[in-house]
Image (tube, rainbow, N blue to C red):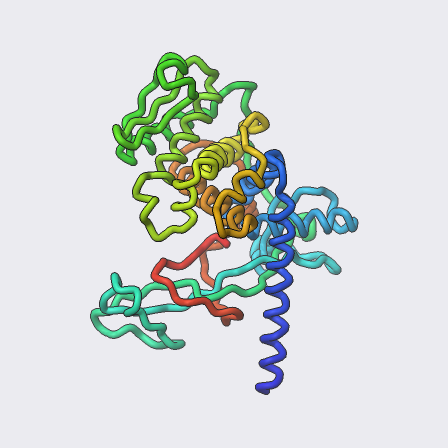
Length: 358
């Protein structure tokens, strides 16, 4: 029995290694600014999942398209085998799923939750002692599989209405929603008549005065894009980020090129989620900023930057009461119910709460 368990463990480790290799290949292929823009546009449509998993889904779906297994080069909705069954659909015979990285969590308890060393892992069925705080934490990853809707048949999937915009038009309510979030972060929003007032820029964020300025001599869509860009700076690039525990945040603050990429990318994802044309969003050549952090692997810099962008954009989008495109989940699917699983690759316990949306 032990020998079989070791073999199963080795097989799962091999699957994880293969997924990580495929992921590195996919991320490493992001060369131009247009490559990055297309990746973020896709991530906006699949924003319920991590950037790493959106890249894995995109690459494997395109491979399925090239081999004739799916009719379109771009996926629409993806879900797990059992999830499709809950929606009245079945995976068709012969259709292989797309491998993704799923989180494995465990329960931890502590009497002094602010002390990172005090957390102890609870055994299966074990209860916390009186006075202890419990928290779920990420302890590893496991391979999991999803299928595109075109790989299934059964009950029809209802199509929610997609936002439609005229050229240059801003989505209804988006400016007000973004403005409210800027102000909720303690910043005053000012609209200025032209670029000369703010040094030739479209917008500016001043952390010393806690002001965000946006010029008004632009079209509606351009103003909304600029406001989303500045909100990205507000949320990601405060001076406090220089000394925080988030290494990616420190890199962005210390390397202006990355900070600008992050802010513009947050704006791009927010725009894409609202059906805005993002073809004029300016992203520099990927290697120029991914290589700007000494001692860091450019692929890892890209992954960290992309996930910070996705997580920030999702935080913004979740607080907006605006019509948005779908997030990659089939309408009616509930992915909030946790799934028990045995960890395949252990990581050191961390104090953060359970990671979701992988």
